[in-house]
Length: 126
Picture 1 (cartoon, rainbow, N blue to C red):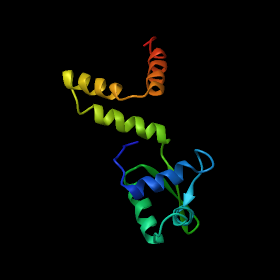
Picture 2 (spheres, rainbow, N blue to C red):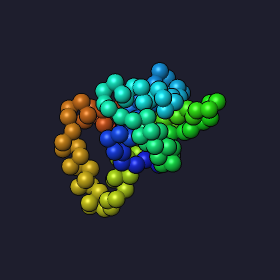
Picture 3 (cartoon, one colour):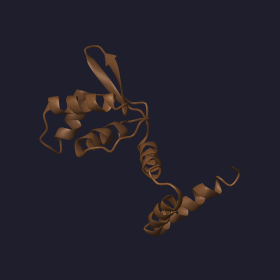
Picture 4 (cartoon, helix red, strand yellow):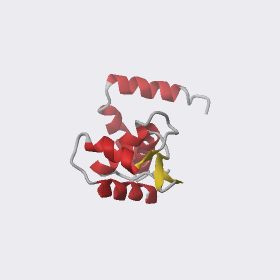
């Protein structure tokens, strides 16, 4: 899944898709619009445009369902976040990469550090 930095509205749409009942659940523009309209004043056509852009960015899949399209997130929120982190880290090499990693860990909470240790211990066999 090619990640992209998301704008506020793109993120709100993705949040709706991720919050769908199951990872395989798909939503129409109408369903996403109804959910977003509960907390903000937003036009149906704006939601439709954003969802089309997310499909072009390959962040969601789009499948025909009668006269409408159903959209599904291509990956989980965790998978997308991990890809964004990898993409950002890829911009650094050598000492800069080590410095960036150290700065990231320096600001991490105790819970984050525990999660990192657990993840790293699972890689010991690599």
